[in-house]
Amino acid sequence: MKLKIPILLLLLVLAEAAPKKAPKKGPANVKVPVKRLNGRPSGTHISPFPPASDAFPRKNAKAVPRPENPKVEKPTVAPPKNHEKNRQGPCTTPECEQAAQELLDGMDLTVDPCDDFYAYTCRNWILNNPIPPTSNVISMFDQLIDEMNRRIRDILEAGPSPDDNVPVLDAKTMYSACVDTGTVMGMFGGWPMTLDQWGEEDFDWQQMAAAGIRQAALNTLIS
Image 1 (cartoon, rainbow, N blue to C red):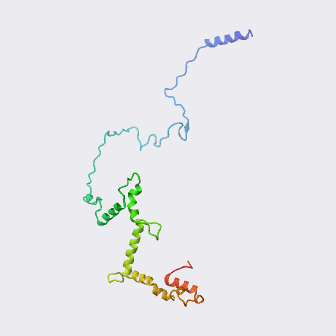
Image 2: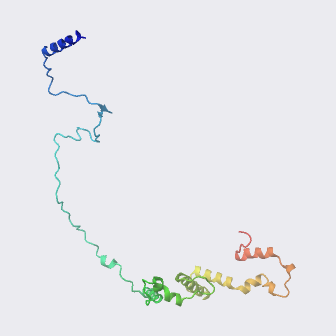
Image 3: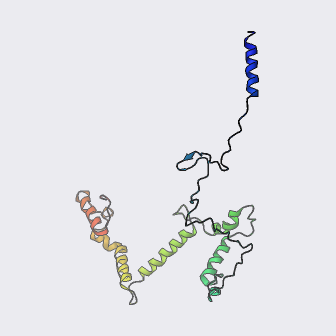
């Protein structure tokens, strides 16, 4: 061990005394190899535009100044002359006034709408239009349908007129034939069950069903 320690010290002294070589001077611009991924430097943003091309030259590129306060011009097209005429105003026809009066008559203005809005809008109409015994509901639409059916029936029962066109004449003829119950019942022998001479053995339900299908298009058995 005594011999090894002086030898190590001698080696250290010789290493310090040896002349040191100066570092070699390389070129000013040293290119460092860059890792590339799919032909582009890895870890960089991939732009959709090429770095330099004839379509996008960067050498002579100039920034386009933006106006701070662009001017906005007012439209020069004038409105149509009949603009005021086409503006919708309140309807003052007799039909509109009648509809408005019916709405007012159905309301109960003595009720506070915040307490009972339904009574405020509909109480008088409910009191003036009770539900008929033949129905379980009634509404303004039901009344309009009934009124329309009454008017159509009055037209059909008025009989033919020289002013009627062909469809109206056909409808009146068909209606009068359908409501002529006496003639229809006579074609089938009357109402036999109310007559004393009716016999069950003489009744044929098949003939009656066939007559109903043939005369009135009543498919009661076959659909």
